[in-house]
Image 1: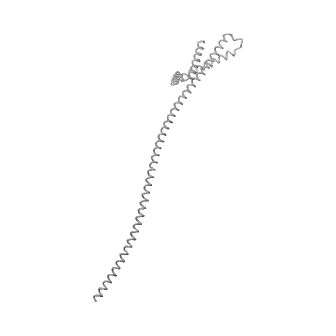
Image 2 (image 1 turned 180 degrees about the horizontal axis):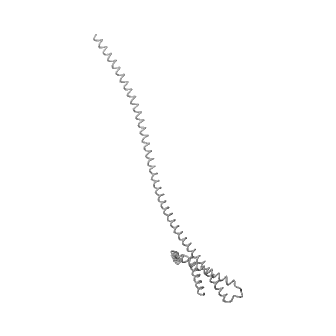
Image 3 (image 1 turned 90 degrees about the vertical axis):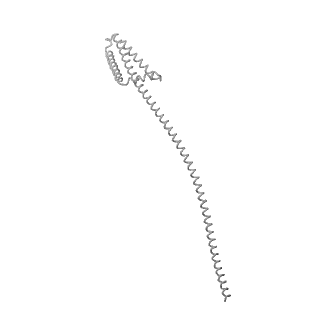
Length: 219
């Protein structure tokens, strides 16, 4: 009986030590987490549940024994029964406390593992955000370069358009001046043609006069 109490005290202190190690980030905590991860694989959970169920059954039996001893009349209880009652109460308390600490260890291990997974997920998300930001920055820089090149092309096209417009205007002015010159030349040609016709008519009249005077002399 004394050995059982000592074993229960050792289990309780061991569980308390594990809980304290879970509270501080040390290399030993990482080793304990890795060990519990391996224990929870395969047939480990079944063994742990079997041990916990056995301890629970023993605790229930001990509590039943305590109730039976306490239900006896006070006159029939001797010092040995009192010692046995105190011993059973201590055993039941230690077994209940050890089960509670085991449940705490299981929950702490579960939460720490979930926290590690969440941290890894957050780091992966941060890396993806960084890569996306880098891609966006690269795309933005390329778009800026394309916009600046397009603006330069637009300015070049505008300058070429202005030059073409000036050239067209100069050609229009040249065509207008040539048209005016051609009109003047036509008018001058008409005037010269009219003067030529007048001169021909005058020459014809002079020829007729000369020929008429010659005829008179001959007669």
